Image (cartoon, rainbow, N blue to C red):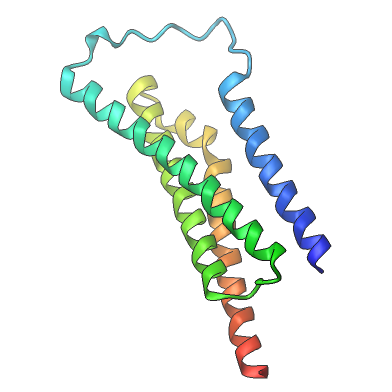
Length: 147
C-alpha cells in the first residue's frame, strides 16, 4: 500500500511541476499582442502586483503542504488529522491560485471566458485535493471506530 501511495504522490507532484513548467515556459505564439501596462493607473498596477504575489505565495505554500503530506505518508502516518489538514490546505491554496490566475487574466486580457478556460485544471486540482481530504477524514473516522 505504501509503495502505491508513494508512486501516486510522486506522480501528482511530477504533474504539478510539468503543469507549472508548461504554463511558464511554453512557446508563446507570435500572434499574442504585447501588453502595454502604461495605460494602467498606479493603484491598478499595485493591485495586480498584490494578486501576483498572492498567487506565487499560494504556489509555494501548496508545494510545501504537498511535500509534508508525502513525508507523512512515507512515515506510515496516512489517516491522521495532520494529513487531512495538509490536504485541505493544499486544496485551498490551489483554489486560491486559480482565482488569482483568473483575476490576472481578466485584468490583463479583458476576456473572462478565455481566463476561466485556461485555469480550469487548477480548479480541478484544488477540488480533487479537497475531495481527498474528505476521503481521508472518512478513513480516519473508520480507523477510530474500528480501533
